Amino acid sequence: MEYDLTDRTVLITGGGRGMGKAAAEKFAQNGADVVVNDIDDEVAESTAAELRDGGADAVGIGADVSDDAEVAAMVETATEELGTIDVLLNNAGVGDAGPFLDDQYDDTFQLNLDVHLHGALNCIREVVDGMVDRGYGKIVNTTSIHTKNAVGMSPAYDVGKFSLLGLTKSLALELGREGIRVNAVAPGWADTRMTDEFSDAVTQQILDNNPLGRFADPEDVANAMVFLASPASDYINGHELRVDGGQVPIDSWRLDD
Ligand code: ADP
Image (cartoon, rainbow, N blue to C red; front, side, top):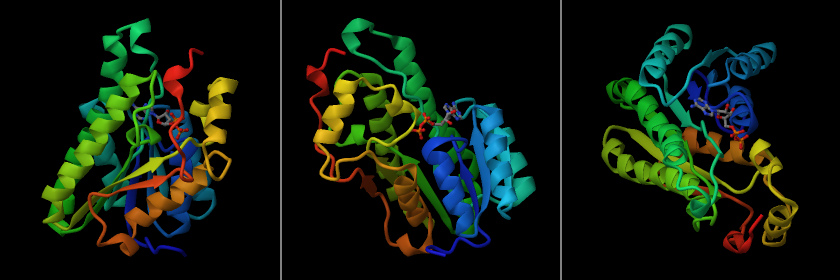
């Protein structure tokens, strides 16, 4: 085991596919009991079933993290099934955003804030008292390459992820005193559904501006998430760990496709 998480219960939001699923697999490999959440019930359950087949204790729970009542019910069920949550990975995300001038889209800003900021807040609110009582907890938030420099043509996503970074840094100061570490992992562009939709021009710019010349594998990102959830990172707090291969910003604001 790289990082021992035996007897720790981990809740992963948006854990049904992509980086969240890779993290769920890594957490299980390192001994954790895993609660796999996703808004898509089917992928939450199928990922949990795969983990159980591999010998882990795991449950899949469908819930929309932006809905506080659904989050409260999810945490109650998760705690009954697998015990108090020791580690929360706020990973649920939406990639739906476009240029501001095309559409001043209040709905898109709202969706990005609902999922990235309020979704994380709803989950933290439900688990934090248990962490404070035990004087132990790890919260890891998935931010983005978008928090290195804003990436033009997607302001709603930029704002959603910058707000999650602000929450990370602020709560790290307050909750650190309670034995809770709050950190973020900022994935570079990874091989997932979101990047599958990029145009050839954007894909080429990303690869040309990446010293490693490739997208991140979901597993590259999962490794950092497990590290920040493990005792190996106990003195790291309020940090955003970039897993982007040294990616240099792209000229997305010049691209019109
Ligand atoms: P990636 O594959 O890059 O990790 P995705 O956007 O494909 O990113 O995955 C994010 C996960 O978050 C998806 O499985 C998606 O279904 C899930 N998700 C999106 N919105 C919510 C939400 N409101 N509540 C819970 N999970 C969500």
